[in-house]
Amino acid sequence: MITQAKHSRVALITGGAKGLGRYMARTLAGAGYRIAFSYWHSEEQAQELLRLIEHTGGEALAVQADITNSQHLNDFVRQTEPRFGQI
Image (cartoon, rainbow, N blue to C red; front, side):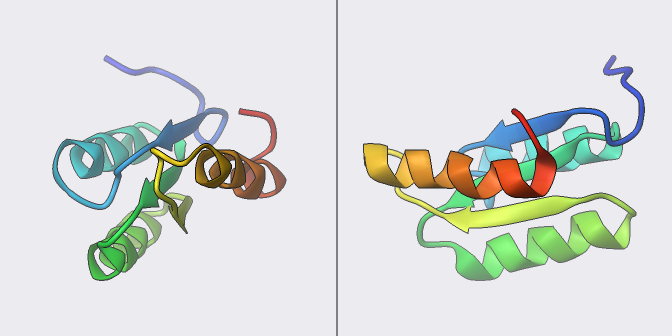
């Protein structure tokens, strides 16, 4: 069971638009985490997940990034920190 104060934690999820990453994003958002997730080719699914999390009162950020590319991964973190603070 995840028990944290609402919006006090940030989850950084790679590949969050589909599959297990999507499930993790929804579950953690429901537990009050602010969610930053990456996607590569699944923009439609990423936008749908953003709407779903925000509709249920959560906060989320979707970043297009190929996490096998170190520059993309660094950019993912750099885009997350200004919005949600230190990870």
